[in-house]
Image (cartoon, rainbow, N blue to C red; front, side, top):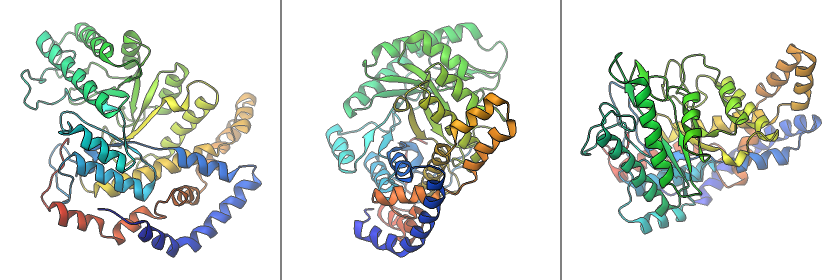
Length: 426
């Protein structure tokens, strides 16, 4: 569904007076504190987050999946939905495809479609954690499987994904493995790790020199005795063994409860080993909830480490990739993504407001309370007017969800695509 510039402008005008008042208030506050509000808005405008192709349909739990209707039926319609998100939020300009579900039937047509929507192709995602008609089964693992024929098949799949990505202009490959075991003795812990390293090396050698390998980790599920890559340290170990363009991908949901993720981020940046993020949120495990819906303060602290690490020269900001990875069983997926993009922007903006010079002085002087107050002062500030202003300046909606509902977008999508349409890749 296409939304016209005139419709957006008319909607924005209806809320512009209130927005100007709120923006003027925070502008006055921040300017008194020495902040350049215009520079802040420019940074917010520049920060873009990729959308995964699998997040555009109704998600699922381990027990069921309940369709939302109007889901994209093919890759072209997925691109259209991301184009819609781009129009409304001005916060995303790329898509991350999942193979084998997103193999284009016509590469020229798909590239043309994406270009017309202002969308590029982010890192490609392989799938060796499910069976989808391939010769060998991944029931007992893929890159770390005891059978070499299975390992070879998994390597070949990843190389195929690289070839597809090259045709689309992608510059990265994301690898997540479900490999592991459920029972003691089921698999050799050492051998499976070695086989994984050897398989990753083959994949790495097949990548173009301007590509990077993003390697995820996960402590449990679907295997519960051991996973081959359970933590950031194992992922980092494997990455260092295969090459300097292999780095660690942090999925916020892939951690045990109460894990200090911001410390992991700081450690990876210290080593220049942070590949990027998959944004979501979690209460108990890999719940794939809307980003910032459960732990907004943690998200803020993560961005504090990211910004300070970049400013201190630990790792270049532009070397880090950003993507949402969530499953939404009870929400309209487009509304869920809009909420996530908003919360990520808010957390990023708050982290930009931390008085780092003052906090560093407090740290050096042992002023624990003062250091915490530096963080709280930034976290408690309402920065939504800044995020909204950045979006309006780029031509987006002042209130993306409000405009989305006013225009009955989901209803229109259902009329076009049907109430039973189901997106692939879930």
